[in-house]
Length: 550
Image 1 (cartoon, rainbow, N blue to C red):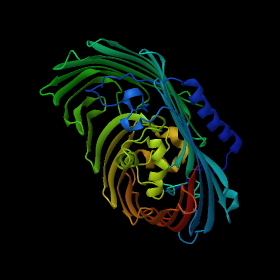
Image 2 (image 1 turned 135 degrees about the vertical axis):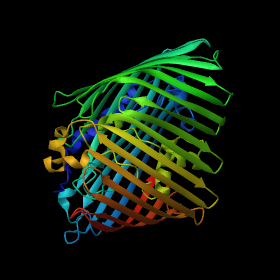
Image 3 (image 1 turned 60 degrees about the horizontal axis):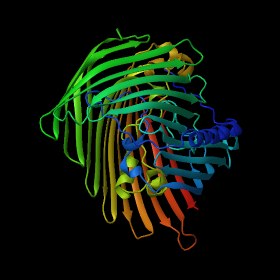
Image 4 (image 1 turned 30 degrees about the vertical axis):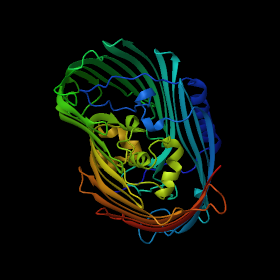
């Protein structure tokens, strides 16, 4: 079998990309001038729909709250990285290079009673001393806004994201934009979601929501998509404390560009929850799902049901779990969270029929987010994210890869993490296990990966573990050690890849020179061992950086 690398373009028109970022930020600010503070009754019997869920009103985590008004926080970072294998090539083909990154950025936040806006943008300029053809500019945007347009009735959520990721599982796996692998793709996600909410006093609450989202990529062979989603729910209110009920409906229609492919995913269900005690409840759902897409694994529609429980023994601990049947067979869902003064624990298991486009921007457990809560529980995560990422070097690697594919697939995803923070030590541990089984024919990915590699994506599994230890040497200095091990299984073939990453860094706040100036030095080793000939590589790199906010 011949292994190929998807050619994700390394150079794009910079002015067009910058215009898209500015346009997205301006749209979020102009479109959403009011804040939503309504609250949705949870669909306690159903697994979450496989689509991005926008933070909204009191559904947003409490740490997102902050003082009213607008705040602008410019920032700038300069990074120098020397790599002895900047393209992650096999032994004998390695090329070393010095890469300079000049990264201006800005964080804009605005909050009032009827609006909440958070826009975080970074321009990632990469300059290669030797391989100058790879010099380029990347744009990274995370913008969200929520608004209350008509008090207690009409709301709008919006989200815009621009980010980079590895395109394929079998190509070289970069952990940032420095490695010029040809396996890096730019992804853009735009979402707008108007909705109506109403409370019938303590009897019930209802929500009617429409969502339109666009997913785009600079990888031409990946079909861009538009998704139109309709959701309706009627759920019992405070009057029903012992026996709670709900009716929920969802319909998603996905169109893939440059093709005649359309996918429809529809689900209707009724929910019941019986509260055995004020903290413990038994749940059940029953309904029907009607899906319309070309399947290689039989029927796509059937009755659906689940049974399970909810348990909230304290405000800091909650567990939701259920099991049942769907058209693809047995199905399971679990979500558990626990917080103490010094620790944050998260476990989740989700399975659903989905697409790359739906998963773009929809992650599992956010380990870095949990650490943000632990270190700064009362500060807006957007404000402290740069400091937390600085603490970690370049963040926590090792989340399962949402690799590019045009197929529908059954995804089963398990994630667990714990973050522990002491007076001098911070420790983060996480594990993940994600499998994907294709439900669409192979030929929809022919242009993307080539005919000889189609079997690689029929059935895959990713499993791994990550560990971080950060030691506070003084009030201004930290030492950080992190390691990752991941294994990629291509279950329709005999290929298996092993990944190892280890990083050691020293970070220091340089207050003598500038109050908001920080510096970092990092050593990194990265390697892949594969039973596929020509797929092994090794890299050693050293990075020095300074970061400043104004």
